[in-house]
Image 1 (cartoon, rainbow, N blue to C red):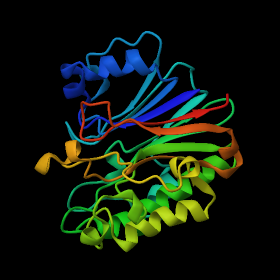
Image 2: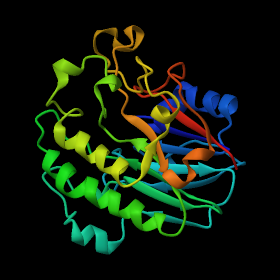
Image 3: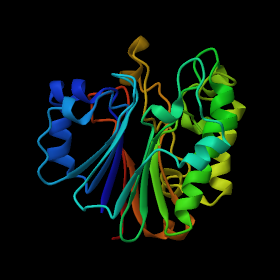
Image 4: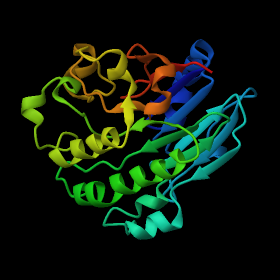
Length: 266
C-alpha cells in the first residue's frame, strides 16, 4: 500500500493549477492525507470515483482543515479529539481561536491499523501560540494516538510544524529558538519517539541531508533547496518492520510543501 501526506496550502488553489489532478493520476495513492485544505468538501471541485473522501474542515472559513481520501473504506472515521481529551488539556482556544474547532485531526480505522492525519498548530513567529502547542496540543495529540494504539497500530502523518533535529533544516544555527525549532516543539517530537512511534524517513535514511518538505516563498528558497523537513509519517514500533520505503517528493509542485509517502506491506 502507498500512503501519501501533503499540506496543500489550499486545495482549491492546487486544483485550479491542475497540479492536484496530475498528482493523483501519477501517484495513485491508496490512502492520501491532506492538511491545510482551507475548504469544505463541497467547495472542492473534485471527481474521485475510486476514493472514499472524509473531511474535517475548520469552523472558520478558508482556514486550516484536513482530509483523508482512501481507496478502501475505513471501518470508522473520527474527527478531532474525544471530549474527554479536549477537556483534560483545556483546548478551549486562545486569541487565535479554538484549535479543536480548526479541523486539525482525522483518524480512520482500517483492518490492520489506524491512519491519522494532523495539522499541528503553528507556534507563530512571535511564539504567541507556543504555550498552547507545548502544554496542550502536543500532549493531547499524543494521548489521542496512544488511545487508538491500544486497539491496533497507528500510522500518523501530517505537517507537525517542527524540524526535529539539525539535519532537518538548512540553517539550524540561525533558527535555534525560533518557531518551528524551539526546544519545546522539538521536545514534543521527542515524546512521540519515547512513546514508541518511529520517524519512517529517518528509519530508512538516518543520515540523509538536504531532505526537506517545506520552503519559504522568499529568496528563491525552493530552487536553492533552503528548506525544512516538517512533514512526516510516524508509525507504531510494532508495525515499523513492515515499512518498505519512505520518500519525500520535492518534484511535486503546487504548494509550499511537498508530499511525503510511505510504502507498507499490506
